[in-house]
Image 1 (tube, rainbow, N blue to C red):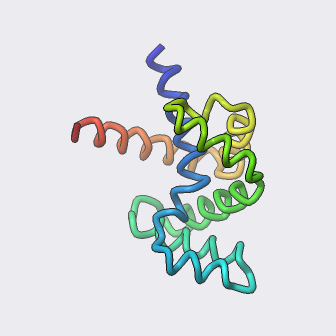
Image 2: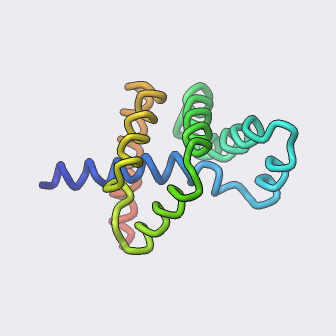
Length: 135
């Protein structure tokens, strides 16, 4: 049961983190500038790289791979799917229960590759332990 719960949390972490967190942590000015760019996708990837790189938990190559995969995955989500994810979170449920999120998690893991996926899982587990210790 503990392993199942861990997999659901990690799956949710992949979807939430990869889809939104990387770019969401950037200040609004950087995001607004990215959306004004003549190449929005590339600008969003660059903002993600800048923000994700600040954590110094991933190598430059890993940051690049993570941001490219995350921004591309976010770009494939429809507004309706984003609303469904937010509604699920607002219901205090895991978005990992949604079929399209499960598929996207598999696609993201394939994009990341086994090495980066493993590292992200480890970092997610460490962050969750740290957050629980602070409670």
